[in-house]
Length: 147
Image (cartoon, rainbow, N blue to C red; front, side, top):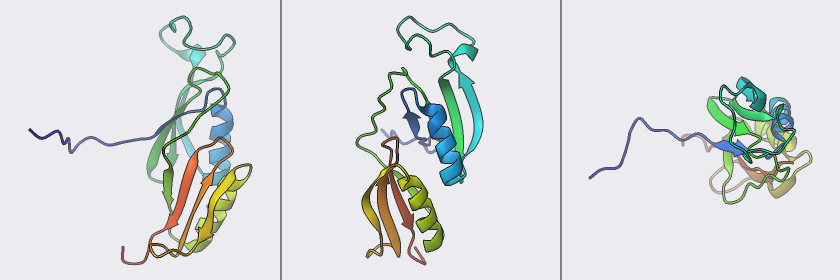
């Protein structure tokens, strides 16, 4: 029995635990992200279950959809506890030129931590890894020509 669904696709959903609006602004400036949709907890058509969010989080982001290049990235403040955790994955950002890689890597590194500086590798003329100021890991890569 096949479990492959050729119509399915994966979109990252990031929970910023109370810092979503700050993250959205950062990605707008750093990556040119566009906000396609943003809904706050206070605008929910249904009441939330008790304990789902912290008191005073009515103006926090319940759901947002960002477009970065041709990719949708969804985001939320989640439970608004103030301590986002992004472990065990990275977002890969493919760009066309080394200059673009340099620019976007520097923007993501502002307030973040470089894990691997941008450099030439056997698989890319420019590749590096950086955890941004929220802890989201990014791999910036320029694909090799003809690949």
